[in-house]
Length: 255
Image 1: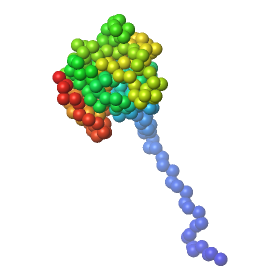
Image 2: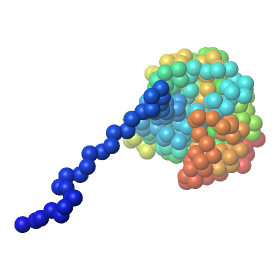
Image 3: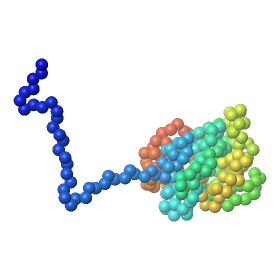
Image 4: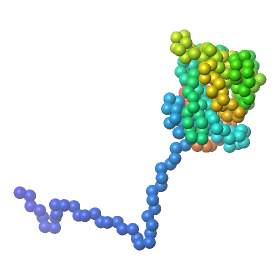
């Protein structure tokens, strides 16, 4: 039989109560941090790469914060690191971080087959361009209702208007046919979308909104002035992370 020694007890002593000094108001715990715009967009588009969305938001905030463009309501993001057989265009409303469209989008015929790997800023290259674009006016052209864009990055996409790099609809942007033939139909460098959705997408983006076209090219990622600003969207770590993904340098005929 177990015999307790004098002074021992079989139960622990009661914890001493901690009292608040009279007149001292307890400080409530700090509220949890609110999600950033980039995080909210990632929640709205879970199949998009959150690091690419972070870069897009960083570029958007840098462009508006520096006065390069006026504040915008819409942001379109193209991820050219994805195959053309997959949706790789996202259009967001920024005020409430709402996803408006997820679409297939074509790249230039000389940028690659299923994957775009070569990009240019040169007239006649038939290649897509990277970087941040400001949307402009609509017009009726050879592909019907179309949206002009102005490239905001010298040496990367600033010849977009003279190259007629526009958003338009095209019958060759056919997701079902892309699966059968192994790639989407290709453009002369334009980010073409499905004909049936083109007008809606164009109307959501016309008149000074922003489009961010991404590919993990280290030269562009480290040289873009819109990715050099500090902001909630991205950081040097984000740039380094996406730049480490497999990719090829930009085409030499950038100018």
